[in-house]
Structures are given as C-alpha cells and as structure tokens.
Image 1 (cartoon, one colour):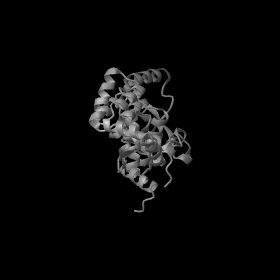
Image 2 (image 1 turned 30 degrees about the vertical axis):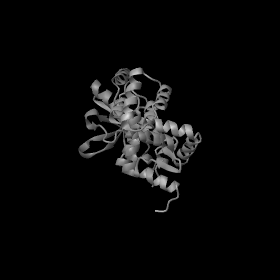
Image 3 (image 1 turned 180 degrees about the vertical axis):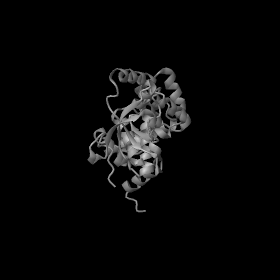
Image 4 (image 1 turned 90 degrees about the horizontal axis):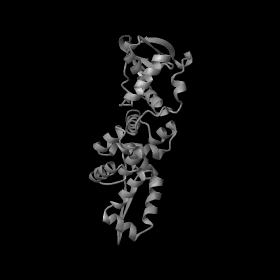
Length: 278
C-alpha cells in the first residue's frame, strides 16, 4: 500500500468527481466532531477571532466531512470553523463530503493540522504514534510524507515518554518542544521533573536549560567524559548512524554500549541497521 500524507490540503478539498468529493451546504447539527482529530485543545482567543471573521465574511473555506449513519457526517478537517459556526448559531455550513476510511480520516486531520501548524508538539507526536500503531507506518514513511527528516519524527515520538507533569506543560504551552527535547535526554524521570521545575521557576531559555542539564550530569558521567574526550564524538556518530539514543559506558577493561529504542517499529529498524539476522 502506498502511504502519502504529503499530497496536502489541495487533494483533500478537491471537489471534482474524480476525487470523490462534492461541495454541499449541510446543517450544522448534522455534523459531529471527528473521532480521529489529532488536536485536543482549541485556543479560546483564536476561536473568538475566527468567529468575528465568519460573522463578517461568512465561512470562506468549506469543511471536509465523511458520511456516517442516519444522515449525519463526521468532521475530517475544519473543526474550528464548525465550532465557530455552531457558536454563532449559523444554520448551515459549506462542506465537502468524501467517503473516507478511518485511515484516510486520520490522515486528513493530520494533514490539515500539520500544514496549518495548529498542533502542539504532543498532539503531533500522538498523531504520529497512532499512524504507526494503527496503520503500520514507519518513521521513514512518516518523515517523507510530512516533509521532515526521520530524526525530527523520532524526537517528536520521544516526547511521549516524558513524565506526565512535563507533558501537561507542553500541552498547555508552558514548555516548548525544544525544552522538552533537552529534558528527554536526561535520566532518570525524577531528574527530568527536578530540572523541569527548576527551569520553569527561572523561565530559562532552551540554551540555559542545556547548560543546566550539563551541570547536573551525574558525577560518574562527567568523570567518564573527562577521562575519554573521544567518547562523546563516538556516541554522537552512533546516534547519527542508528537514529536513536546511544550511551557508551567505559571501564578500565571493557564497558557497555546502550542502544535505546522507543517502539516496536524503532526496535526493528535498529536491528536492520545493525544487520542482525532474526
């Protein structure tokens, strides 16, 4: 099966018969929120601005829906427009009706939100995770589809491993994805929370948080890097080659190479990169 998210909104809102779409006016009450909507939070101020625009100019761009049972429709794209129209008491809204599968509905919602930059970092990561778990996407396929490199997709997915307290801060816009990425490179989770609280209290920049994390490294890690200045370079190269977190723990007569993975698909990809026969 060919998997392409990157075709964009143009294809999603295509009303030509060949594309299976048709532009109609639907009653607002016929429409229900999409089960596959990746965005979980809707900014109240932005919604008010959209309401004011619709009140003045009307709904300029149709929403996209798919038909469901008993003459109702499920939103695929345009939930903010639908919510604004509903709040204004509009009886109808222009819509493009398309017979989409569950996979296509999730893809359509992800396309709209990614291309319009409406998702917060965790919502984006959760959408990636759903596509991987429910529809067998790989990180490489996702990266190609959304126009990002694979490491960006991998970094987004790692946000889902952060403690819930930090994830709440990201969802609420109190912590940037850059800050969260820095905290994701710290172990254990208790230290992540400690550093997060310390940085949040002082309103640190990403750069300041990076410096703080370096200072708060365990003494053993600092000693190891001071004794072997090439260690960090080797770790960085292994991380680049394998696309995941790699830690070298050296001893006098040996050591350990720790390769982390963050999903079953990630594990399979690393095994293939290492050319391990299974």
